[in-house]
Image 1 (tube, rainbow, N blue to C red):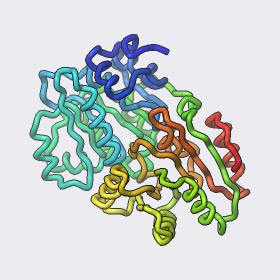
Image 2 (image 1 turned 180 degrees about the horizontal axis):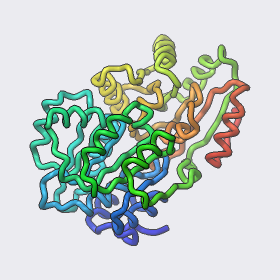
Image 3 (image 1 turned 90 degrees about the vertical axis):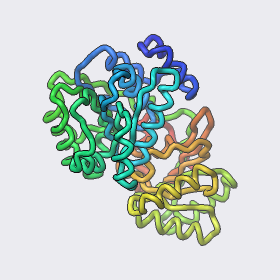
Amino acid sequence: METFKQLGVSENIINALAEMKISKPTEIQQKAIPYLLKNSTDFIGQAQTGTGKTVAFGVPLLQKIKASDKRIQALVLSPTRELCQQIAKQIFKMTKYSEKIFSEAVYGGEKIEIQIRNLQRPTQILVATPGRLIDLLNREAVDLSNVRMVVLDEADEMLSMGFKEDLDKILNKIHKDCRKWMFSATLPDDLRWLIMKHMSPDTHTIQVSKTEVVNGLIEHQFFICTLNQKFDYLVQFLQSQGAARGIIFCRTKADVEVVTRKLSALKFSVEALHGDLEQRDREKVMRAFKNKKVQMIVATDVAARGIDVEGLAYVAHYQLPDQLEYYTHRSGRTARAGKRGISISFITRDELKMINAIEKKLNIKFLKV
């Protein structure tokens, strides 16, 4: 295992990472950081959520920024408000012992006038959702002419959320010599089209092995039941967890609402989180969850992106995800900071083949309970 120093990370950033309890580089960090520091070609890093991508691109961004130039030099595009906030916060923490580099996050759900005002301050790294950035560009409230590095984080997720045209417009406005770094769990056809159109033919690509992504401290369980029995067995599991906190995942917004309503009726401390909620309501739910005023949340996959809450004892899959990659995203919410956690799936007998597929693809072992 290489150290951050061996990867070429500056002493000041290493000290900041140590304070963030990040001392050993992950596989994506080992592969991406030295390459991005030394080379000026386009780059694709194929890696799941939870592999440490923000540090993988954040370190090279910070070390390439000219602190004396107060214009926007780097742009990070991300699918959700929560991820934008998380990235901006992590970049800010990484600069604690370095020369001050200013970052700003812009996203929907907040008054655009406030963000326009904030952008008048020195801003060297802009973190944005594609939709809000297009709004700002239409108002001529942001200048991207000096941008020389663009990061597309969770690129496949941005496309699945309908940002293909926005990304195309944004990349068309960037200087042709700008370096483009893309991080994505998968490379669907739409994304390959974007790569062919906007990235150079000599783009360097790396892939992180999926086996490293899955945390060894998570105990993966499954419980076989009929559809009619599923809710009752979920309740039994939650009761067995006592005061422990966790997340329950459903595939659709409608299912999230139904499960939340039924759990509330049984006096569980629970809130719903899905894309149809107003931004302020989503923030209110997340604040309550982080502050331990709510014991559990029921969420869809997209709404849960960017959730980073410590001390979660379990993840319950009321329904298995549509895509195998999402299982990693979901289960990675538990067993953080060296603690153990449970990832339990409530499945029908017909879904056993999906459990087998997840085991095979992610190299994990499920326990039948």
